[in-house]
Length: 233
Length: 233
DNA sequence: ACGTAAATAATTTGATCAAATTAATTGATA
DNA sequence: TATCAATTAATTTGATCAAATTATTTACGT
Image 1 (cartoon, each protein chain N blue to C red):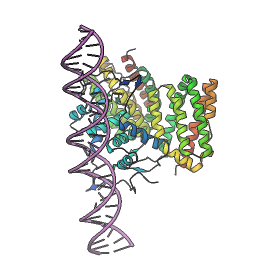
Image 2: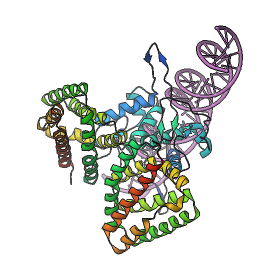
Image 3: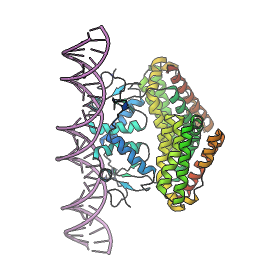
Image 4: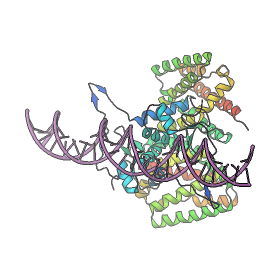
């Protein structure tokens, strides 16, 4: 009975100073976010090997937090550790792509529908801002900018759904896709990316949930199709 | 271009001695499995606080591997870190349960169908062995035994599907469920657990895939329903 | 008793180092 | 030149410790 070491648990309590909450996050948390964004936004390429020391140096951190961050990201599928203990960015396979598509098509429209219902005006404005950012990045051919704005667009809707588990599953699929999307953009250029975001935003404005859902579905299908074409058989 | 620190990558190569492959896994890997099984098989209770030192002591390990294992399990949802940095076994909520059920009902029947097609005789025999183990555990009221055999039964089928991503998603849902199942068994006793495994095994024997799928679906629904009843509103 | 601040204890966190493991290089031999 | 073993280099891994953070207890005043 009882925890292994902890006697009594108390409510979490963030120390607050002068009406302003102060929460100093541990470094492994920060590092985790940074590496995740490297993967998510295409700063890293499928098959690329990573080393703990290399990451620690690049991110100006010690080796201990980096290790914890890597384990976490590995659990989410964004990275993989080979049996030689080397860490790499996984390479997409057709087999994986099919599985990812199945789950994305189940979970993301659901998230979008729930989220769309709960989107307040502030969030819709944010989405329109991101929509403009996406267009701009496409114009400029800014791959990193596109990937980041695209991610934030989707997850702004998903976050509104307030469905932690679906959200985490979805995120784990996105970190698997990130490096491949980078390849897609490099291969086909950003200009060829059709833009479902405008449709989704309009649907949001008009309260047309079905339109939002369809737009997101189409967005997913197209994205997956692009990636499919970059996988050598 | 190139990894952050690694110059050239080579094929993974397990050193083999005398025709027998030797792979010494790192301790954080072993620890991870141990903690996961604690969660999965109900050795740990919803809300229970865990400490790094406590786990390290219990598992006879250093603190470093335990930390990495915890991060990994946290990423999978089996544990959660509060903002006070304390690690706890998450408590199930109705909201979470609904999300878990949605994904389980999508992914697991799919895994079961693909897996069932690929189940060779050896695997079917293994399933029948596990089926007997489940019955035995139910008879004895052995909660841990039931949870473990039940887990191995399902994942023996799922593993046959050879669908890594679906499998990892499913596992992440099971670690979220484990502690609650333990509560269910404690509350209702093992005797009340209806047994869909027999049905599934028979379907497997007769090559009746639909029967397997239906049995698993029913199994999921019942399990979720039991958990639902233990959640206080 | 009650609440509050200070003191103490427990825990997490991150750096560092030695050992273990793995990769790359060298050199000898055919 | 090609192959294979030995050597060297690079990397991961796990223990340990000091510092930071958080929890608990004690002391004190009302």
